Length: 405
Picture (cartoon, rainbow, N blue to C red):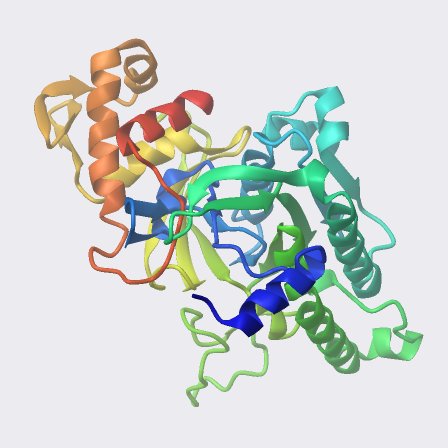
């Protein structure tokens, strides 16, 4: 028999959604399976094995990197992939830097002219730390007020076998933290530089401390874009401790530390290899390494490569192929490539997509190889409680890449 106090307390707060007990976490796929599994966990529940792959509900996620590495493009694509399956899900996009246009957003998200207005609430002026905070609160409160319209059965169970219910996810992109300022900076503070940075950091710290509970309560996944800057005051003859792990000496993050230590995940993007249309994959773009600086569901320090097409954004299918190449599960064999597990099946960069979508046997083999090696990104022995289930991982991968065709 359970505790009387626990029973009485639960009965008292049952009708108050703001005081409900914590539900088990669920994860939403980014649409990029190497990232999902890089951030994944596995446990045993009363009904077997479960995998949590993707971004956890109601959390803050930060993307850092140098200018032009694809942070915003990746955030927009991930945000669209998260909300797409849910009819009442919306993505908010605060574009403080003002670098986006609607045609680019349509290209990256795959939303048409009408759908993009229904699914994305975009603003690029008058954005301050205070009204950013107010918007998060308003979204959370509206979803709680209309709880029955937003709640859904995730189809997952917690460790005791009970079903998990969640509010349909909301994605909020803040681009960028470096540009988020209080609305009461004086002209002197704006011109002074150092004082302005201090005021920004203090305000942002208070904002992020207060919104974190709201994110979880309203199932709002906050995607924060931040830059990596060079510390102009660094002494080349004196070693200085990095601001956070996996930053190099002399690299700093603007906007205050709160967004870093309160983030559930921090991903670093590094674009080191350029691609030409006349070579290899036939894409004008680059290879971007996406690494985990911080994760509360997997180990930091690991990374996966993604293909960034300068016209169409990150390519989920070719990124899977590149991932397999990077771990030598796909290797060169003369003028062709082969999967190590199926050495007699040859293919090339040029015919890869046609084979994947036109040859069911090839697709099955490719998906089996993906499943095997993606699971290698998840620690083999793990007692961390996670809940997202993929009962047939191979079918799940096939379904995902087919949807993203």
